[in-house]
Length: 400
Image 1 (tube, rainbow, N blue to C red):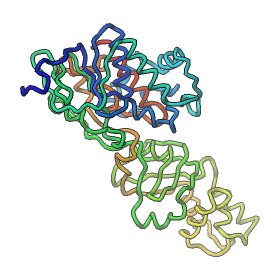
Image 2 (spheres, rainbow, N blue to C red):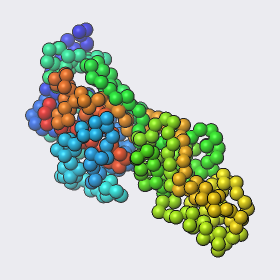
Image 3 (tube, rainbow, N blue to C red):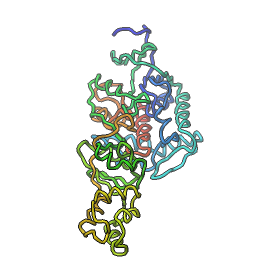
Image 4 (cartoon, rainbow, N blue to C red):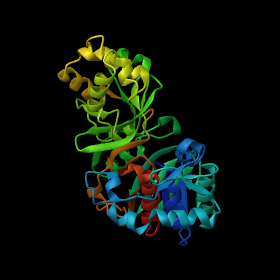
């Protein structure tokens, strides 16, 4: 191997690539076991995704975390880690540091103060374990010689018996994320489940954008479905298409060429309501009738699309049924997503068949571990992906 600027590699027990949620968690646990730990991070600051999460308050876990909240080619893979280190375990750590928190909705837990508190907590855990953190490091090459891994960087060469890849996926590249971890996996012969953007806004084609141009910025409560997946949360119209929690959730299940089905008046019998208004206010316009069910701008768009008579009295039952379906079963085909630029996470990653579900060690390369988002396990919106980072980080940190 070509020597870097440091002819005698800096030797550690464990090298962790990435100072995000999973990498920092793993480093603290391993260091406090007495292991010599070095964390290498290309960004200038650790935990950047933690910092921006939850509007700056960090949605650090979810009380209702269960395997059903995660997508993977192997749905059972996440069971062991999640049961070994639960949301309650992380909450105990948060409370140990005196960090005040609250449940916002649906089990989502946030800091009362700042997400910086979570980063500072993790860095203090590193300090307790005497783990070293080096920021702004460029990695040139990684190799394995005998039982040791060698990492060649612009700060010299580093050697360790164990290496943990916690580099995340390519979502939100402005935070310094990339597909680097996949390259490491492929270098060592591990399979990759093709990655793609997830928890991401969906986009419309030009015709749909024009039709819903005036809706940008308007939110509605909705039930959004794609295949068997179904989420009942807010939906937001944007100048590119659709966003909001329900859309971000369904984006992890949607594929190109598929329709999504949206109920914009959940829990309401729209057809019965329209028939009642037709009886009681026969001269009323459809847009006026619909405005009691959905936002006025949306009511006008749906009424215009129906191209019906001027008065409700002149709407047949068949046409009323169609209008009701436009509200409760709006079938729309997005033309894509906004991509990694705005995706909160990456779906896919290192194939779980290559890893131990208890230690996250490669089955074919002893000492090589992959944790967090780089692995083919992706959580729903609402703190689940952070819990995966903590759980997988602890699982590897206990054994490296």
